[in-house]
Amino acid sequence: MSSLDTGSWRTASLGTVLLIASPVLLFLLSFLIGRYPVMPLTVIKVIAAQALPITPDWSPTIESVVINVRLPRVIAAMTVGGGLAIAGASYQGVFRNPLVSPFTLGVSAGAGFGAAAAILLFGQRYAIQLCAFGGGLMAVALCFAMSRFYRLNSTIVLVLGGVIVGSLFTALLSLLKYVADPNSKLPVIEFWLLGSLSSVAMKDIVPVLTVIVPAAAVLLMLRWRLNILAMGDEQARVMGVEAGQLRFVFILFSTLIAASAVSISGIIGWVGLVIPHFARIVVGPDFRRLLPATLSLGACYLLIIDDIARTVTAAEVPLGVLTALMGAPVFILLLGRGGLGWA
Amino acid sequence: MGVILSAKEIGFAYPGRNKPIFQSVSLEIAAGEILCVLGPNGVGKSTLLRCLAGLSRPTSGHVLLDHEPIGSLSRAEIAKWLALVPQSYETVFAFPVRTVVEMGRAPHLGWLESPGTEDRESALRALRALGVEHLADAAYSEISGGERQLVQIARVLVQAPKLMILDEPTAHLDFANQARFLALLRRLARDGLAVMFTTHAPDHALALADHTLVLSPRNPPLAGPTRKVLTERVLSQTYGVPVHVVNFEGHLTCVVDDANVQ
Image 1 (cartoon, rainbow over the protein chains, first blue to last red):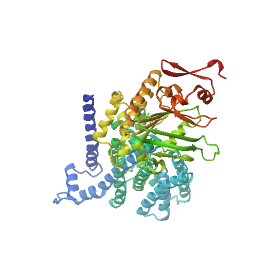
Image 2: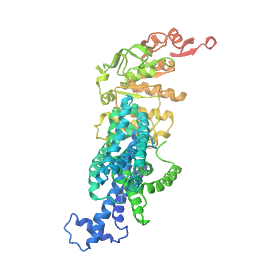
Image 3: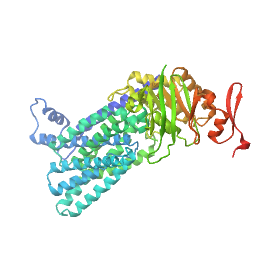
Image 4: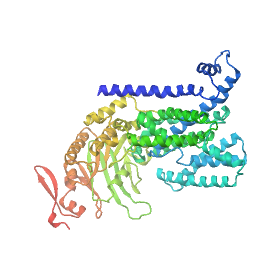
């Protein structure tokens, strides 16, 4: 028994080290990737110079590439990836269903509609971002309103609401696409929906970070209770947990994360579905370890995807396309492997 | 020790239906007592347990937990007094057994707290006390029904309530495990835990229940000391088949008169 304990403790700490080290390493490596070559040491110095008094021995071009071009992308990719993954894992726990993703309650459909409406009406970047965020939240609010209306606080009604709200917003989005000018507006809408971080700037990321960081902190602080919620409402209640309230809290903060992630990246599917599964294989189903692991793995995954997106071809491949192209085979492999952490 | 839970004249009807599934049920349970609820299928045994656990609100009468109306208590306050073991439940995620047992600490921990070293040790102690320590790292979804039952009891021990309510705890157990499980309930009651359970086997009531409540589709509910309540007449009327109560060296057991079953 005791030898078994130390064994699992050792693998646990090795896993923890990897989960902390990989995002840091990938963060630094991602600055080296791209058409303009930069030396690893220069990257560290340029970034450090933002806070520390270091006399520059590098060209302003390098500084601009690192700080204005690559840094926002790297941060955005990690934030969106980690955010969608932790939101997906929380949704899966709340709905007790490993096939659920952060878009199950219509966040993506609502955000897509919001973004398309903003592209048609306003066209400015911040307006698109704000409307996508608002649309995503509105879709989930509608799901809750529906379950309230029927006085049923069950997850089934919520998920059904998600299906209804999702197709409603998809239909509205189709309508907007139909009336959009096919030469100017329609390609913008289509491109937004495919997901991209190519034009993201630091000023777009700041509002997103101010939502995602505190919301993820709340999920992390409550993550043990997600285990109990995942046992089912009735069981949670007899163990002294107000299941309805707790579910609302988890859905609220996961939705805030998913909606703000989507608001800068466009619709990026698969991350919120595949990463929780992958994390479950690495650290097991206990949400105390799963949620931090999804944060790390999601950030790494989308960063790698985005690195691929901006390097393999001259014209960027949309992120949503890449995550699906990569995600589907990965998911098939995971399913074949077994030991997924769910029955 | 005083009364832990009492129900006064409670009844329950599903919304929109006039006819209650049970009514005028009164009962009391004190520390160390074992109360058994008997009755044929569909008389509302599980619903009664849900009402007593505060999960459903009775449509008439009231339930008092530690002399307070149960509706006025929070889920955490209720869970410190009372634990419910449902008939069976599945988990979607393959949580390790020790994680499931630790969940019993929930009512004792604040919103932002999670189990510490002491809680983890008490979970292991509970598993050891029930002889299933070797399952600590097994996946809860992969152990047998009998083992799950014991893991649920371990969870209850960690939750440390005054009253444990079980819904048909012996339904999924084999013959020997039923006997072991009843002995375990007796032992827990001797240590001061109040135990209430439903069953389809009158023998189990006769074997260990101090009091028995009989719910019948035709007659009003009947409660009292087990051997006084479970007469041949009452059992025969309740289940609608002729029942003889046989005394074998002090153990009472029920035998159905096969020849006269309609």
